[in-house]
Length: 99
Image 1 (cartoon, helix red, strand yellow):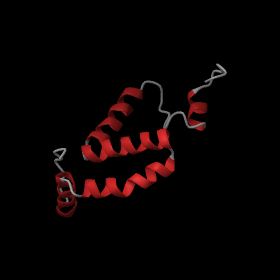
Image 2 (cartoon, helix red, strand yellow):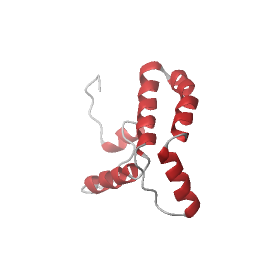
Image 3 (spheres, one colour):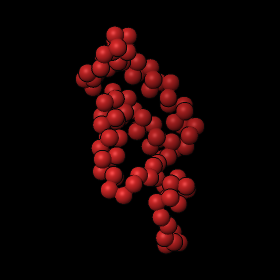
């Protein structure tokens, strides 16, 4: 990016700038599919994952790893955690509440 060199989607995928390459015209459908998968997860866990990734970028992997146990303990004590475990045990879809 700093050199201004052009590259195609395959090269962007190879060097890790994109997670996946889809056929032309399928981009929106795939993006919506991924968004729906993420939206179905526990919102507090999604938020914590994003916060931990940002911490890793900002302060390094060691800082993110150090913070992880306390974040996991915090998440385990939430109502969403209980909802998720109940859904898993009863083989039903969870209905997370963000608490």
